[in-house]
Length: 376
Image (cartoon, rainbow, N blue to C red; front, side, top):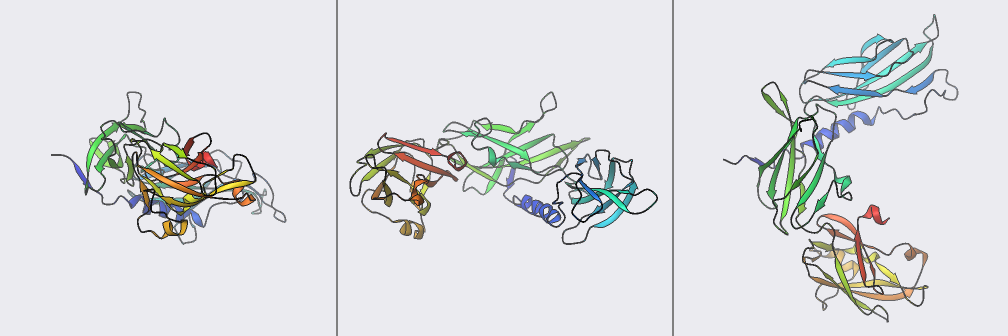
C-alpha cells in the first residue's frame, strides 16, 4: 500500500516560527558596539555570541567563548513575559545545559558580569541570547535561491529544488519528500533522502519523473534515528511548481513607432502560466529617434480584439492568463518622457507562481524575463 499523507499540519511550521519570533521580539540586544561605553554609563558592554547544541529531546547545551567576567546570570525567556532568572554560574564557565521537553521552543538570555574588585559595582557586562527547538529540526524550501541553477531549476523534464534548516533543533539524518499533483487531496510518499557514506546530507534534490506542464506540490519532513526508533520533524509548507520553462520566453512582432503602436508577444510551447495584471503597466520603451519621447502601455489584449486598461485588469476576478505558445497584444501611447518613467521600463508578471519583470526592445526584437532582484 502506498504511504499517503494528508495535507494536514503543513502550516504548523508557521506557528513554530511565530513563537520564536515572539520570544525574541522584546529581548533582542540592539547595541552591537563591542566594549564601548554608553554616554553617561559606567559599565562597558559587549555582545556575547551564543551557540546551541540540541543533541537530545531532554537537554540542550548552550555555549559561548570565554570572557573575563566574575559570573554569568542565566534568564529564561517566555513570550510576553519578563525574563526569569534561573541560574547563576561562575565566570570561568563557557557553557550551560538546560533540561527540556520534547518538541518545545525555548529562549534563554546569558549575561556575563564583571565587578569592580571588592565591590558589586558593575564595570563590564556582556549579553547574548539563545533560541532553539527541542525536536528534530524543521526543514523549509530555500526560496531565496530560485535564481541559482544549482539550487533551483526546472523544465518540461525535471524539477530541481533545495531545502534548508529553518530552526535550531536536532540535525536530521535524512528527510522524506511527499508529492501530489496540484488539485489532488492527499500526498504520496515519493522519495527518501539519506546521509551519504561520509555522513553528509544533501539538501538539493531532483524530481526526474514529471509530465510536461503538470503542476506538482511538494512537502518535506525531516527525521532522526535514535536507536531503532525514528523521530520526525514538522512537515514543511507545500511548495508548488510546474514542469515548464524556468522563465517565460516570448517573440515580439509589430510596428514600434506611430501614434498608438501595437506589439504582439507570442509564447513558446514550454512556457508555463503567465498572469498579467495592473503591475504590468509599468512597461514601456523610448522612441527610437527621439529619446525625449516614450511609449507607455495603454491597453492589453489576449485575443487582439478585446482590450483592457490597467484599471480594468485590476478589477477582473480572473486575471489575463497566457499559457504555452499563446499570444497577447500591447497597445502603447506616445508621450513626453519624464523622470517618473525614465527608471522604469519593465512590467511585473506572475510566471508559474513567481514574480518576474518583463522588458521589451521592439527595435531589436527582444523580450526578456528576469527575477526582480536581478532586474532592480
